[in-house]
Amino acid sequence: MASHSDLSVVLDAVRAAVRDASALCLAVGDPERMEKMGHEPVTLADYGSQAIILRAATGFPDDRIVAEEGSAHLLAAGGAEAVGEIAGLVGRAVGVPCAPPEVIEWIDRTGGEGGRTWAVDPIDGTRGFLRGDQFAVAVGLLEDGVPVAGVLGCPRFDAAGAAGVMLWGGPGLGAFAEPLDGGEPVAVTVSAVTGPEAARVLGSVESAHGDPALVREVMDRAGLGGGWVRIDSQVKYAAVAAGLAEVYIRPRNRPDWRERIWDHAAGAAIVAGAGGRVTDLDGKDLDFTLGPTLEDNRGVLVTNGAVHDLVLGVLQEG
Ligand code: AMP
Ligand code: MG
Image (cartoon, rainbow, N blue to C red; front, side):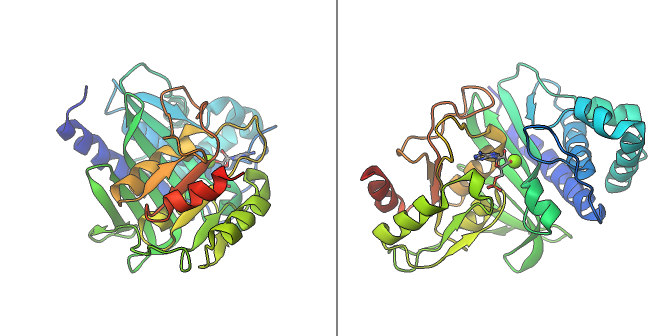
Protein backbone atom coordinates (compact mmCIF):
# COMPACT_ATOMS: atom_id res chain seq x y z
CA MET A 1 0.00 0.00 0.00
CA ALA A 2 1.49 3.35 -1.06
CA SER A 3 1.95 5.92 1.67
CA HIS A 4 0.42 9.39 1.58
CA SER A 5 3.79 10.99 0.77
CA ASP A 6 4.09 8.71 -2.25
CA LEU A 7 0.73 9.98 -3.43
CA SER A 8 1.80 13.60 -3.16
CA VAL A 9 4.92 12.85 -5.22
CA VAL A 10 2.96 11.14 -7.98
CA LEU A 11 0.30 13.86 -7.88
CA ASP A 12 2.95 16.54 -8.44
CA ALA A 13 4.28 14.60 -11.43
CA VAL A 14 0.77 14.15 -12.84
CA ARG A 15 -0.01 17.86 -12.43
CA ALA A 16 3.15 18.81 -14.32
CA ALA A 17 2.36 16.34 -17.10
CA VAL A 18 -1.28 17.42 -17.40
CA ARG A 19 -0.15 21.05 -17.66
CA ASP A 20 2.21 20.15 -20.54
CA ALA A 21 -0.39 17.92 -22.19
CA SER A 22 -2.98 20.71 -22.00
CA ALA A 23 -0.51 23.07 -23.69
CA LEU A 24 0.07 20.50 -26.42
CA CYS A 25 -3.66 20.24 -27.10
CA LEU A 26 -3.97 24.00 -27.55
CA ALA A 27 -0.82 24.07 -29.71
CA VAL A 28 -2.50 21.80 -32.28
CA GLY A 29 -4.27 24.67 -33.97
CA ASP A 30 -6.53 22.86 -36.38
CA PRO A 31 -6.71 19.25 -35.24
CA GLU A 32 -7.39 16.67 -37.89
CA ARG A 33 -9.90 14.03 -37.02
CA MET A 34 -8.91 10.37 -37.41
CA GLU A 35 -11.73 7.86 -37.27
CA LYS A 36 -11.38 4.86 -35.02
CA MET A 37 -13.97 2.41 -36.18
CA GLY A 38 -16.67 1.95 -33.59
CA HIS A 39 -15.06 4.46 -31.24
CA GLU A 40 -14.80 8.14 -30.58
CA PRO A 41 -12.82 10.16 -33.12
CA VAL A 42 -9.16 10.66 -32.24
CA THR A 43 -6.57 13.30 -33.16
CA LEU A 44 -2.81 13.73 -33.07
CA ALA A 45 -3.37 15.69 -29.86
CA ASP A 46 -4.94 12.63 -28.17
CA TYR A 47 -1.75 10.66 -28.86
CA GLY A 48 0.57 13.54 -27.96
CA SER A 49 -1.24 14.10 -24.68
CA GLN A 50 -1.09 10.39 -23.83
CA ALA A 51 2.64 10.31 -24.67
CA ILE A 52 3.32 13.18 -22.24
CA ILE A 53 1.34 11.62 -19.39
CA LEU A 54 2.79 8.13 -19.82
CA ARG A 55 6.28 9.64 -20.13
CA ALA A 56 5.69 11.01 -16.63
CA ALA A 57 4.53 7.55 -15.52
CA THR A 58 7.97 6.12 -16.37
CA GLY A 59 9.07 7.69 -13.05
CA PHE A 60 6.69 5.29 -11.24
CA PRO A 61 7.53 1.89 -12.76
CA ASP A 62 5.48 -0.05 -10.22
CA ASP A 63 2.25 1.71 -11.13
CA ARG A 64 -0.38 0.20 -13.40
CA ILE A 65 -1.60 2.25 -16.37
CA VAL A 66 -5.02 2.12 -17.99
CA ALA A 67 -5.25 4.54 -20.90
CA GLU A 68 -7.62 5.12 -23.77
CA GLU A 69 -5.27 5.13 -26.77
CA GLY A 70 -2.64 2.81 -28.29
CA SER A 71 -0.10 3.27 -31.10
CA ALA A 72 -1.51 0.54 -33.37
CA HIS A 73 -4.29 2.78 -34.65
CA LEU A 74 -1.99 5.80 -34.83
CA LEU A 75 0.48 3.92 -37.03
CA ALA A 76 -2.28 2.47 -39.20
CA ALA A 77 -4.08 5.79 -39.66
CA GLY A 78 -1.20 8.28 -39.70
CA GLY A 79 2.01 6.31 -40.26
CA ALA A 80 5.53 7.56 -39.57
CA GLU A 81 4.63 11.09 -40.61
CA ALA A 82 2.03 11.42 -37.87
CA VAL A 83 4.41 9.96 -35.28
CA GLY A 84 7.07 12.48 -36.33
CA GLU A 85 4.60 15.31 -35.98
CA ILE A 86 3.62 14.12 -32.51
CA ALA A 87 7.28 13.83 -31.48
CA GLY A 88 7.70 17.49 -32.44
CA LEU A 89 4.62 18.56 -30.49
CA VAL A 90 5.63 16.56 -27.42
CA GLY A 91 9.19 17.89 -27.54
CA ARG A 92 7.98 21.48 -27.67
CA ALA A 93 5.48 20.92 -24.82
CA VAL A 94 7.96 19.26 -22.44
CA GLY A 95 10.96 21.36 -23.49
CA VAL A 96 13.15 18.37 -24.41
CA PRO A 97 13.58 16.96 -27.92
CA CYS A 98 11.82 13.60 -28.33
CA ALA A 99 12.45 10.86 -30.90
CA PRO A 100 9.54 9.09 -32.63
CA PRO A 101 10.38 5.64 -31.16
CA GLU A 102 10.26 7.11 -27.64
CA VAL A 103 6.84 8.56 -28.36
CA ILE A 104 5.54 5.16 -29.45
CA GLU A 105 7.04 3.56 -26.36
CA TRP A 106 5.34 6.09 -24.06
CA ILE A 107 1.95 5.82 -25.78
CA ASP A 108 2.02 2.05 -25.33
CA ARG A 109 3.30 2.09 -21.76
CA THR A 110 0.02 0.65 -20.47
CA GLY A 111 -0.60 -2.37 -18.28
CA GLY A 112 1.21 -3.48 -15.13
CA GLU A 113 0.07 -5.01 -11.88
CA GLY A 114 0.60 -2.33 -9.25
CA GLY A 115 -1.85 -1.46 -6.50
CA ARG A 116 -1.81 2.10 -7.76
CA THR A 117 -3.45 2.71 -11.13
CA TRP A 118 -3.40 5.71 -13.42
CA ALA A 119 -6.68 5.95 -15.35
CA VAL A 120 -5.81 8.18 -18.29
CA ASP A 121 -8.01 9.87 -20.86
CA PRO A 122 -5.57 12.01 -22.83
CA ILE A 123 -8.43 14.01 -24.35
CA ASP A 124 -11.77 13.40 -22.72
CA GLY A 125 -14.43 14.88 -25.00
CA THR A 126 -12.56 14.64 -28.30
CA ARG A 127 -15.76 15.72 -30.04
CA GLY A 128 -15.81 18.89 -27.91
CA PHE A 129 -12.11 19.44 -28.64
CA LEU A 130 -12.80 19.24 -32.38
CA ARG A 131 -15.84 21.53 -32.13
CA GLY A 132 -13.87 24.19 -30.23
CA ASP A 133 -15.85 23.41 -27.08
CA GLN A 134 -14.87 21.91 -23.73
CA PHE A 135 -12.52 18.96 -23.29
CA ALA A 136 -10.30 17.70 -20.47
CA VAL A 137 -6.95 15.99 -20.06
CA ALA A 138 -7.86 13.50 -17.34
CA VAL A 139 -5.75 11.43 -14.97
CA GLY A 140 -7.36 9.59 -12.07
CA LEU A 141 -5.17 7.85 -9.49
CA LEU A 142 -6.65 4.77 -7.85
CA GLU A 143 -5.29 2.77 -4.97
CA ASP A 144 -6.62 -0.77 -4.88
CA GLY A 145 -9.46 0.41 -7.11
CA VAL A 146 -10.44 3.44 -5.04
CA PRO A 147 -9.99 6.92 -6.60
CA VAL A 148 -7.60 8.77 -4.28
CA ALA A 149 -6.72 11.75 -6.45
CA GLY A 150 -7.54 13.24 -9.82
CA VAL A 151 -6.21 15.90 -12.15
CA LEU A 152 -8.26 17.51 -14.93
CA GLY A 153 -6.60 19.89 -17.37
CA CYS A 154 -9.42 22.06 -18.71
CA PRO A 155 -7.81 24.45 -21.21
CA ARG A 156 -11.06 26.07 -22.33
CA PHE A 157 -12.77 26.21 -18.92
CA ASP A 158 -12.82 29.37 -16.80
CA ALA A 159 -12.99 28.93 -13.02
CA ALA A 160 -11.61 30.63 -9.93
CA GLY A 161 -10.85 33.74 -11.98
CA ALA A 162 -8.62 32.02 -14.52
CA ALA A 163 -9.17 31.33 -18.22
CA GLY A 164 -7.95 27.78 -18.67
CA VAL A 165 -7.58 25.84 -15.43
CA MET A 166 -6.37 22.60 -13.97
CA LEU A 167 -8.60 21.12 -11.28
CA TRP A 168 -7.08 18.60 -8.92
CA GLY A 169 -7.74 17.03 -5.56
CA GLY A 170 -9.13 13.98 -3.86
CA PRO A 171 -10.86 12.65 -0.76
CA GLY A 172 -9.05 14.10 2.24
CA LEU A 173 -6.89 16.33 0.03
CA GLY A 174 -9.41 19.04 -0.78
CA ALA A 175 -9.85 20.37 -4.31
CA PHE A 176 -7.97 23.11 -6.11
CA ALA A 177 -8.18 25.16 -9.28
CA GLU A 178 -4.89 26.30 -10.75
CA PRO A 179 -4.46 28.58 -13.78
CA LEU A 180 -2.90 26.58 -16.62
CA ASP A 181 -0.68 29.49 -17.58
CA GLY A 182 0.93 29.62 -14.14
CA GLY A 183 -0.11 30.89 -10.73
CA GLU A 184 -1.03 29.45 -7.38
CA PRO A 185 -3.72 26.83 -6.77
CA VAL A 186 -6.89 28.20 -5.17
CA ALA A 187 -9.04 25.93 -2.95
CA VAL A 188 -12.49 25.26 -4.38
CA THR A 189 -15.59 23.66 -2.88
CA VAL A 190 -18.96 22.60 -4.16
CA SER A 191 -21.73 25.18 -4.04
CA ALA A 192 -23.72 25.87 -0.89
CA VAL A 193 -27.06 25.73 -2.72
CA THR A 194 -29.35 23.46 -0.70
CA GLY A 195 -32.75 23.67 -2.38
CA PRO A 196 -33.71 22.45 -5.84
CA GLU A 197 -35.02 25.83 -7.12
CA ALA A 198 -31.55 27.22 -7.85
CA ALA A 199 -29.88 23.89 -8.70
CA ARG A 200 -28.03 24.07 -12.02
CA VAL A 201 -27.88 20.86 -14.04
CA LEU A 202 -25.19 19.61 -16.43
CA GLY A 203 -25.30 16.95 -19.11
CA SER A 204 -23.42 15.72 -22.18
CA VAL A 205 -23.52 17.64 -25.44
CA GLU A 206 -23.75 14.32 -27.25
CA SER A 207 -27.29 12.98 -26.87
CA ALA A 208 -25.92 9.51 -27.66
CA HIS A 209 -23.92 9.62 -24.40
CA GLY A 210 -27.01 9.95 -22.24
CA ASP A 211 -30.75 10.44 -22.23
CA PRO A 212 -31.67 14.13 -22.50
CA ALA A 213 -35.40 13.41 -22.23
CA LEU A 214 -34.88 11.62 -18.91
CA VAL A 215 -32.75 14.51 -17.60
CA ARG A 216 -35.54 16.96 -18.48
CA GLU A 217 -38.08 14.76 -16.75
CA VAL A 218 -35.99 14.45 -13.59
CA MET A 219 -35.48 18.22 -13.56
CA ASP A 220 -39.22 18.82 -13.77
CA ARG A 221 -40.13 16.26 -11.16
CA ALA A 222 -37.38 17.26 -8.70
CA GLY A 223 -37.98 20.96 -9.36
CA LEU A 224 -34.37 21.58 -10.36
CA GLY A 225 -34.77 25.19 -11.48
CA GLY A 226 -31.31 26.59 -12.17
CA GLY A 227 -31.17 25.60 -15.84
CA TRP A 228 -29.56 22.86 -17.87
CA VAL A 229 -26.24 23.30 -19.62
CA ARG A 230 -24.72 20.68 -21.91
CA ILE A 231 -20.93 20.50 -21.96
CA ASP A 232 -18.43 17.88 -23.03
CA SER A 233 -16.13 15.75 -20.92
CA GLN A 234 -15.23 15.69 -17.22
CA VAL A 235 -15.34 19.48 -17.27
CA LYS A 236 -18.82 18.71 -15.88
CA TYR A 237 -17.20 17.26 -12.75
CA ALA A 238 -14.87 20.28 -12.64
CA ALA A 239 -17.86 22.64 -12.73
CA VAL A 240 -19.58 20.86 -9.84
CA ALA A 241 -16.31 20.79 -7.84
CA ALA A 242 -15.80 24.52 -8.42
CA GLY A 243 -19.34 25.36 -7.27
CA LEU A 244 -20.53 26.44 -10.73
CA ALA A 245 -23.27 23.81 -10.98
CA GLU A 246 -25.02 21.52 -8.50
CA VAL A 247 -26.02 18.43 -10.49
CA TYR A 248 -24.55 16.32 -13.31
CA ILE A 249 -26.87 13.53 -14.42
CA ARG A 250 -25.51 10.88 -16.80
CA PRO A 251 -28.20 8.30 -17.56
CA ARG A 252 -27.25 5.37 -19.71
CA ASN A 253 -28.09 5.68 -23.38
CA ARG A 254 -28.60 1.94 -23.69
CA PRO A 255 -28.73 -0.87 -21.13
CA ASP A 256 -25.53 -2.56 -22.31
CA TRP A 257 -23.36 0.60 -22.02
CA ARG A 258 -20.72 0.53 -19.29
CA GLU A 259 -18.90 3.70 -18.34
CA ARG A 260 -15.11 3.79 -18.85
CA ILE A 261 -13.09 4.29 -15.67
CA TRP A 262 -10.94 6.98 -17.36
CA ASP A 263 -14.11 9.02 -17.98
CA HIS A 264 -14.89 9.19 -14.24
CA ALA A 265 -11.95 8.41 -11.93
CA ALA A 266 -10.35 11.87 -12.00
CA GLY A 267 -13.64 13.73 -11.76
CA ALA A 268 -14.98 11.53 -8.97
CA ALA A 269 -11.84 12.06 -6.85
CA ILE A 270 -11.92 15.84 -7.33
CA VAL A 271 -15.64 16.19 -6.58
CA ALA A 272 -15.15 14.13 -3.40
CA GLY A 273 -12.28 16.44 -2.43
CA ALA A 274 -14.52 19.45 -3.03
CA GLY A 275 -17.20 18.07 -0.70
CA GLY A 276 -19.61 16.71 -3.30
CA ARG A 277 -21.08 13.28 -3.84
CA VAL A 278 -20.82 10.76 -6.70
CA THR A 279 -22.94 7.60 -7.11
CA ASP A 280 -24.69 5.80 -9.90
CA LEU A 281 -28.37 6.39 -10.63
CA ASP A 282 -29.32 3.71 -8.10
CA GLY A 283 -27.35 5.43 -5.35
CA LYS A 284 -24.53 2.87 -5.44
CA ASP A 285 -20.92 3.99 -5.09
CA LEU A 286 -18.99 3.73 -8.35
CA ASP A 287 -16.97 0.50 -8.27
CA PHE A 288 -13.63 1.03 -9.99
CA THR A 289 -12.26 -2.39 -9.00
CA LEU A 290 -13.82 -4.38 -11.86
CA GLY A 291 -11.48 -3.53 -14.75
CA PRO A 292 -11.60 -0.80 -17.37
CA THR A 293 -15.35 -0.30 -17.09
CA LEU A 294 -17.80 0.41 -14.27
CA GLU A 295 -19.33 -3.02 -14.79
CA ASP A 296 -21.73 -2.89 -11.85
CA ASN A 297 -22.99 0.69 -12.11
CA ARG A 298 -25.93 2.18 -13.97
CA GLY A 299 -25.21 5.73 -15.11
CA VAL A 300 -23.61 8.39 -12.92
CA LEU A 301 -24.98 11.10 -10.64
CA VAL A 302 -22.70 13.88 -9.39
CA THR A 303 -23.95 16.59 -7.06
CA ASN A 304 -22.88 19.12 -4.47
CA GLY A 305 -24.22 16.63 -1.91
CA ALA A 306 -27.15 18.71 -0.70
CA VAL A 307 -29.54 17.78 -3.53
CA HIS A 308 -28.26 14.23 -4.08
CA ASP A 309 -30.95 12.30 -2.20
CA LEU A 310 -33.69 14.41 -3.75
CA VAL A 311 -32.52 13.54 -7.29
CA LEU A 312 -31.96 9.87 -6.39
CA GLY A 313 -35.47 9.71 -4.96
CA VAL A 314 -36.97 11.01 -8.19
CA LEU A 315 -34.86 8.58 -10.24
CA GLN A 316 -36.02 5.68 -8.07
CA GLU A 317 -39.68 6.55 -8.68
CA GLY A 318 -38.91 5.29 -12.20
P1 AMP B 1 -19.21 13.37 -22.57
O1 AMP B 1 -18.37 14.42 -23.20
O2 AMP B 1 -19.54 13.64 -21.14
O3 AMP B 1 -20.42 13.04 -23.38
O4 AMP B 1 -18.34 12.07 -22.46
C1 AMP B 1 -17.39 11.71 -23.42
C2 AMP B 1 -17.12 10.26 -23.21
O5 AMP B 1 -18.29 9.52 -23.47
C3 AMP B 1 -16.09 9.66 -24.11
O6 AMP B 1 -14.83 9.73 -23.51
C4 AMP B 1 -16.54 8.22 -24.28
O7 AMP B 1 -15.72 7.33 -23.55
C5 AMP B 1 -17.91 8.19 -23.67
N1 AMP B 1 -18.92 7.52 -24.48
C6 AMP B 1 -18.83 7.04 -25.74
N2 AMP B 1 -19.98 6.42 -26.09
C7 AMP B 1 -20.82 6.51 -25.04
C8 AMP B 1 -22.16 6.06 -24.78
N3 AMP B 1 -22.88 5.42 -25.70
N4 AMP B 1 -22.69 6.34 -23.58
C9 AMP B 1 -21.99 7.02 -22.64
N5 AMP B 1 -20.73 7.47 -22.83
C10 AMP B 1 -20.15 7.22 -24.01
MG1 MG C 1 -13.25 10.18 -22.61
